[in-house]
Amino acid sequence: MTYGWAHPGPQGSYYWVHQYGGNVPPGAVLAGTDLDGGPIYIGRASYAGDVLPAKACPSHGCAYVSHAGAEISVKDYEILVGQNVAWRPASGGDIPSQAIKAGQTSAGEPLFVGRTMHEGTLTPGKVHPSHGCLYIPYGGEELRFDDYEILILM
Image 1 (cartoon, one colour):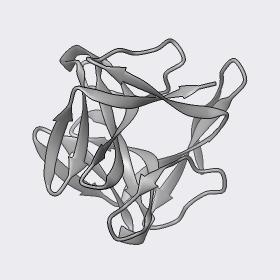
Image 2: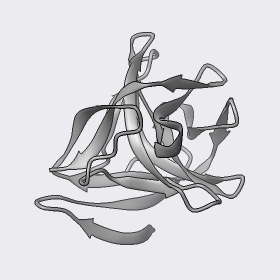
Image 3: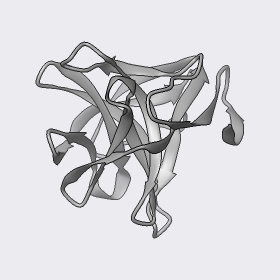
Image 4: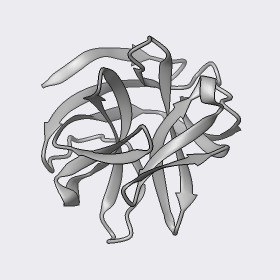
């Protein structure tokens, strides 16, 4: 089942597909490879009143979000399907106009998809503009990075 609308960009588009467990829709956007060798996709999930960008790990049968200092496992999530998307270097909460919005806080602040290299794996998470950083779920914690890549439509 698809949630939301297709969001056209200058030459690309994206949408979110509802998942439960370890399924991966065709065209899912790959973020990196986990330490166990499994693929990591871009996801998002609702948690504590927020819609949060997520690290979707089909080999684990779940996605992970970061919230209030912790990494949280969620079974019910969405995976990003997109065409003509790319990663662009960013820092300090910088949000290019082509950035893909992946969610928002309960207060209505938009959140975007970012990733960084940490302990040998490209790990996605949430770019939180008012905090000026990327947060990733990793090893049971929410980790902060000031330099990262942000996902954009080409």
